[in-house]
Length: 83
Image 1 (spheres, rainbow, N blue to C red):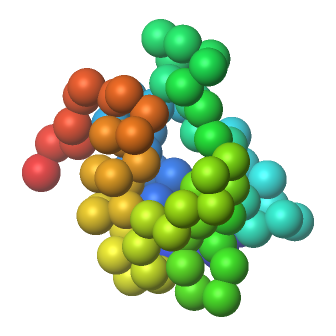
Image 2: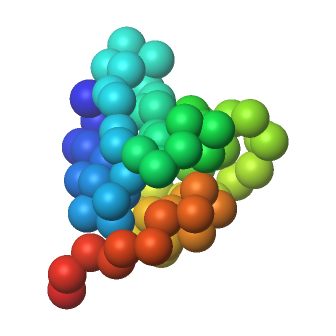
C-alpha cells in the first residue's frame, strides 16, 4: 500500500473509524462502526484523495491529517486522534 494512503488509514482509525485496505486498487474502505450506512471508499487518484460515492476531493497527498478530519466529519465520527 502507498505509504501516504497508509498514513491516512492510520489517522482515520485513530478517529474511531474502521478501515479496510485494498492494496491493488490504491483505495481504502472507511466505515463508521456505529452505522454501516456511514461508509465510503477513499481513492488516491493523481495525488488527490477522493470520496468515491460522491466524487468529492477531500485533499491532496501530504495533507493526510486534514483529509482524515474532513472524512471523519462526513462519516459522523466523534472521536479525535490524540496529538
